[in-house]
Length: 302
Image (cartoon, rainbow, N blue to C red; front, top):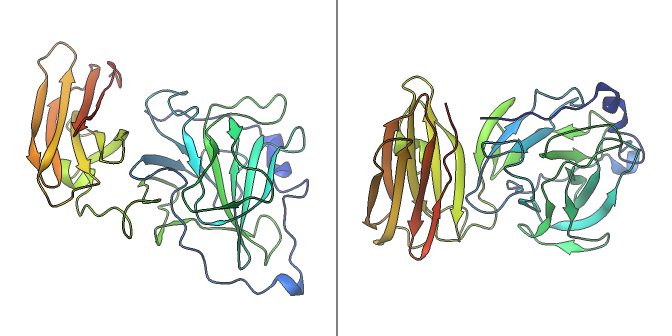
């Protein structure tokens, strides 16, 4: 289930103000190659990006959420989409709707914005690495602007005035699927991204969409998917380490009132898929990889 945040229309005209809009000059007109931006969340996490549910959006901004409740991702780590220098780390107060904002200058005329943070973990002037934690998902804004937790993310260049300087977001070289899409983070994954050739949708099959996920340390991620046509849930655990070699991994799905279904063993790439009909019931789901394990409460009901 996707919980939406409420943004007042009055905030729209303020988002590019108070020093946050960048006006082009002849000296700024040359924008370098786009950095290899990654999703601003830790490796293998799956987040839903939304571009069309906020009156404050003018171009290619994205609001990110995951989990099955409004506060499910409150306090989750936000990491740098690419290496760079922190040029803004401050609460914007009444100036605009950004609340706690971190802005990173990546050089070549490119910068990224991370807004509404619960806390900021970096100071102005800090040099940050790609994947370094810079804050946590929150719901800070200006007084009277009540929003549910989410990360507001933007990519901007310095060759135009706001909002024309807000550019489409790319993650791991792939353009975000505007207006809405689920994206798996490759940020700081081993090698040149997730080494596992399989993803959760491929394992569970056509028609399924990821609705929740849980990292099992750095070893794997367990995913919960749902098929809106068949009303089936599906769980799979995708390995991130020891890929291609057999190691202990499992996935389970338990529909409220029914016996748990589990797939476990020494697998090279993933455990599962484990699927069951759960159109009007809650589910408990999870999995394990080595000594790391996760078991959800009964959730994602109906």
